[in-house]
Length: 128
Image 1 (cartoon, rainbow, N blue to C red):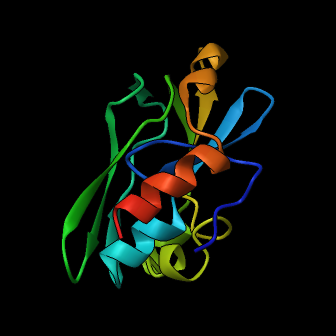
Image 2: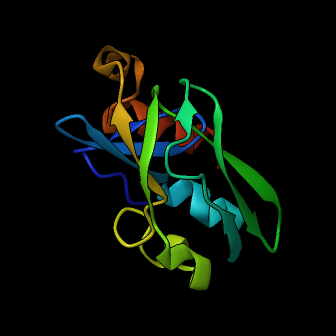
Image 3: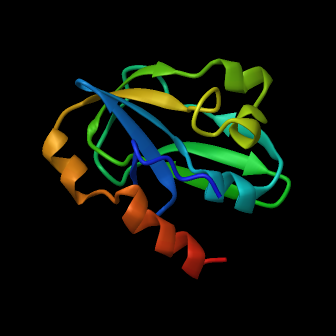
């Protein structure tokens, strides 16, 4: 299982990569593996404002429909349009081409409440 050190994680299996005031968000390798073959992603609208913990997107797979929750408060500034034609990018490259959206971060203090890779790994091991 791939858990990059440079990211922040939630206990709901989302990740966020921070670059200044922009956070790129996606689902973890653990989540995409649990969902299996992803068939559709309902992306958020650009401009949507979300609070930490709000539903941000929905991901459908051959096994289930799962919600993606905002790891931090912010506004959507970009979505990964490539997922509309190829949602399987989340399966093949969850930390790269399979990103879901980018948020303008409103409160970067919320990042301190997220999990490090070291803290996230045992959570995945418990759930396997």
